[in-house]
Length: 344
Length: 174
Image 1 (spheres, chains in turn yellow, purple):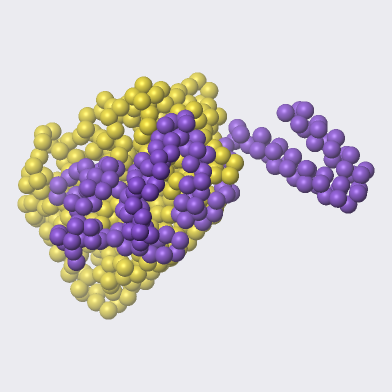
Image 2 (tube, chains in turn cyan, purple; image 1 turned 45 degrees about the horizontal axis):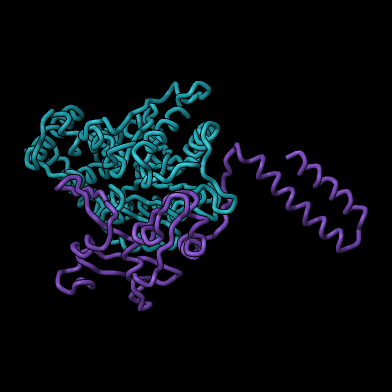
């Protein structure tokens, strides 16, 4: 399971949404300052808090000692957006507690001791908050969190102080991008206390017209306020994108249909596809599905193939190291198989 | 445009930060971005895959602000957290603290900074469930002590005595 193979509300624009809580254990330095020995102690404490006898969480979770996980598998977890590049790069004391359905994950010793995160398909903030709030309580029963009356949950970086909460959503905005609205989106978001980033977070360009919207501030507002504020911003962008898609269809349906079918044509026939082109083509196909130009493919499959077309996933599948050109060939092959299967 | 730091290479890194309502944009080349700090950032490049770069947003902010203020890094004195021994200069470079006690050790330097990046300096959200009873009692006590002071000011001694006894009871029960 996971956000990849489930459907969610508003998924014509919102591919997925995420809530993350940053927490630290009192009595230990923050993750960046821990000795190797203490880092392992912290990891143990977190593991025991979940898998210890009194906790009902343990039935549905798996523990991974990431120190020992091969780098390729770490990259695959990154491509699924279950861990960050920073955690993958940590050599000692890194860990991951992963719910079996992949809807919840707890990173151990990334920037903070614990980063509890829920990631669901579409926009499902209230459901995620309910869930992650309870998980946080269950863990807190077993661990003494660093917390201050005035400053709230104490975090490694002051940008996470207070609630320790980051809410984000992956939005697919091809129509707004085409209409040259990117700059105004970013400015609007910034004025509302949000940031807009590319597909993998703090990069520059957005791959495949996919943008990550997230809240900027964490202290001084309650969790519910942050969620409500974020929700209304996200829904605003979603509405704008839908309107722009309608406008574009009204003024030039033929052009869009052509673009969508060309994208499909290349995906079904090309012999090599680089990552950037792959994401752009998928963006076209995804738009085509939402506008009912393409009818035999569902949005879930597009998420699935998007992840399977990433570098580490392809490498894992072919079971050997692939250079850039070989990746492009493997990707094209996988994609041809996928569409042949779906459209027959 | 040319890099604002070396004035030689083309600026490809454009960093905009908003401090206290003022927008500062820094334009530098990748080399200078790499020179500035020790923070490792893992970047995912569509063609190259995953690479590790050295980059520091906080350092850039500081540089830009200092350039504007005419100060240099040497003006900031060393200051160490007694618990984890982190130097505040390291925090200003990397943007990360060493331990929870750093917040009190560096309180003077941190509070203005937090005030600039967060809308408020008081947490109004969730409280850890286990600590909650203590905080509830603490708030109740503060409330009652205020009421006691008011009662004394207004010479309402009957009420004051009741409040005083209740406060004493709670404190003894702790």
